[in-house]
Length: 240
Ligand SMILES: [Zn+2]
Image 1 (spheres, rainbow, N blue to C red):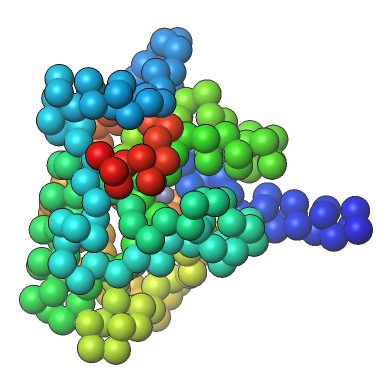
Image 2 (cartoon, rainbow, N blue to C red):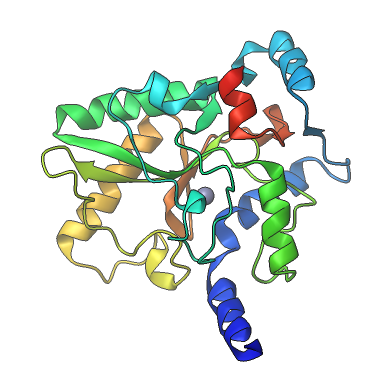
């Protein structure tokens, strides 16, 4: 049994992490040694939105017609092989400017016969802490001390689908594959795969998102310092 657990941890170790580790690093550089501010009640969230309406969390499926969600951490189909979102959300959120930018990207892709499929967007801070508790090793998982772009509601993991077939376009790897093949500078790939990856990158960058060097599927707005880390459940946000 312990062997199985060890195997499972190996899978985790090959995986996790990076989703948000690097974005966390850049935040650490920006905020020097300031303690992390976490919005953890709906009332604190409402106050913060009153101060600045760009902090509003917007439901992606409400804002973006036809967007497809495949929220992997609400299922066992992820590198942890376990459900990380216990509430199994059928909806997800991003801050208003990120959600609007994503809507623009979707609109542009739709004209070409394509659409977006979302693997993850907002991620409650407690889930990032849960990753850390399960695999307490900074080589492999994000240290929650800094929070991530997903915790701030400005990062998204996604791919492109063909609107007719609903199938994902062929990309360099699957979601949460932590090998060199998932890096943007990896070019030993068939032409159509390179083209698909470039289409996602060009479309996302056109609307203000920034790529992440080691994960072709991860994009975020370049202003993490403008948005606090949040620890509100999907249900709480849905009722807002
Ligand atoms: Zn990500």
